[in-house]
Length: 127
Image (cartoon, rainbow, N blue to C red; front, side, top):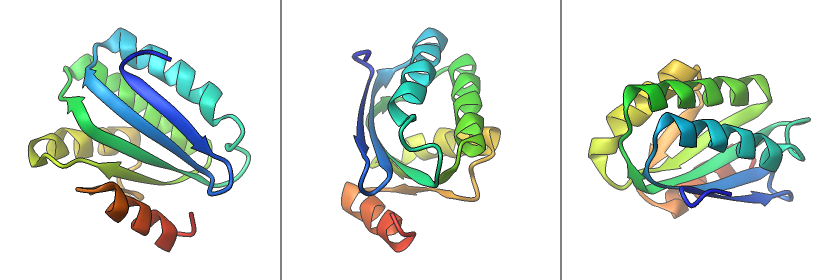
């Protein structure tokens, strides 16, 4: 995996945990999409969720946002139930919410300041 992201799949809870790091260009987002599909493959035959730590993410350009929108559409088409996103800096939230809208996941994605809050929300949702 690239130095810009880390995946950890929790098969028991059906959650893929991600840490997104730094500023991405479109090429990084394309590679991320490919690597993500491989990592989440054991989960996609049933409902699953994402826990995304964006505490080290840097806001990206529009081409990258568009690519992440494609990724979110793919997750929607492949049984993602919820997306809990850790975003401690409020300035990043606007762009992230724009990505949710672009990817069609805004109705079941949310933003949290801490991992505990995000995990509690996913637990309430059955994950």
